[in-house]
Length: 218
Image (cartoon, rainbow, N blue to C red; front, side, top):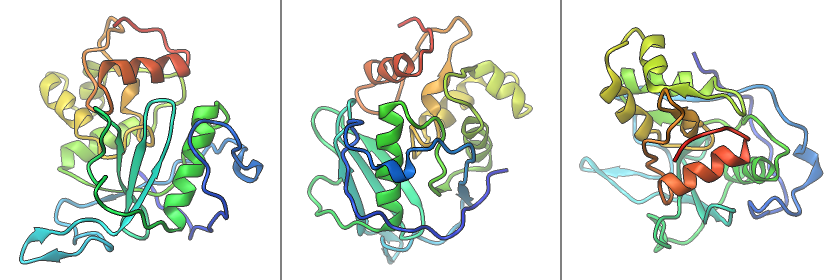
């Protein structure tokens, strides 16, 4: 089961995710993972209010450049709730201004370290809302190490659903925070890339696999 972190502290810089100029204060790779999975019936995240059952746009937004395109992070004020990778030159909330907070700056810093090759795990907190099955899959994904892969069949087997390949693929594709929860480390049993829902799809996943030295077939 995934755990929560202690309160976060802010960083004074706003680095890009290119790997250049990342502050040394957080350059040491962390070996812990600290995530919180919200229940399917959880209240709307703080920072993106709900009115009459309609979800309003998020308040806490931070964007940064990366080798795989711009990244857009959303926070509820306490944790990361969404990570999107640019697709076709656009992000979901390009029309909204950025408003950052401590946890967003921590996520940007750790992502910058990841792209620089200095970080292999993340300890930024996340709040994820999904079905029980989805959350089981995401929890298993969060256990994968840098350079480690798992097949869809192995994921299903690990959750007691050895024949639920299609459902497993759907849960992997619904991951709200790719990279932080590393769904790119899931391949077919023959190491073939069968798809990727983030960024530009297969090319984005292939870049990430190459970055981690994972052999794969496009």
